[in-house]
Length: 194
Ligand code: AP5
Ligand code: MG
Image (cartoon, rainbow, N blue to C red; front, side, top):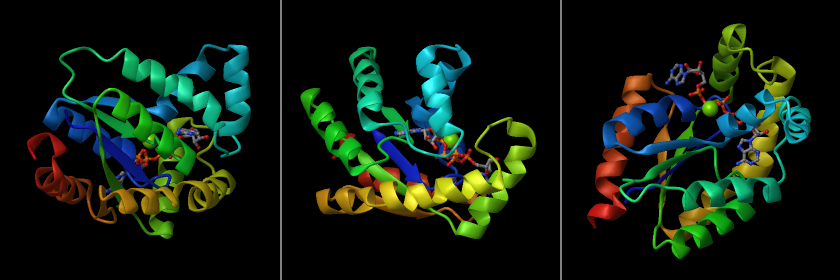
């Protein structure tokens, strides 16, 4: 089983690289951002609460995310080769909870951190905002998302570093170059091949 946590700031390329990895290694791709946006699209009361947070660039409370992840893992097919967690965990509490949950199913994960310069993040998201229709792809909200990332998500790097399963990748390069670096990390680190 190959589980990969793909972390990084907004616009670092998590979604882009997750698709490449999923295809190459036959993994499932779980983007918590996509799950939350799908809930918003249903127009439910919960969706409205989520929308109020996401559109301002704030994180959804940890408690709301735990159920999503638990249901996802419990529903994995027997023949699943592994998952790419795209945008989860995003807080140290989520990281601790995921470690416990994976342990319960006899699984573990490696964490790949996409490191990208802030100017480039902003440039990519402004560009995407022209076509994405995402409520959070505007300059003010992008800046706030990046600040939230530094405050709440960046500390998970230390968590995984401490646990010995942290791998940094320079995400400033072309999509193809970044994917090459990621493949190298996966081949080196594959917990399922150790
Ligand atoms: P989420 O959907 O995860 O958004 P995000 O973290 O802000 O990141 P993005 O999806 O904007 O960027 P990305 O890193 O996927 O980059 P992409 O590949 O698209 O989360 C949205 C919100 O949901 C959060 O703010 C939060 O409110 C909530 N949420 C989600 N998970 C949560 C959790 N666990 N807990 C609490 N709340 C949660 O690339 C961006 C653009 O750049 C694209 O146009 C792409 O084509 C381009 N690009 C990518 N790579 C390159 C490259 N190498 N060179 C040039 N262009 C590139
Ligand atoms: Mg994304």
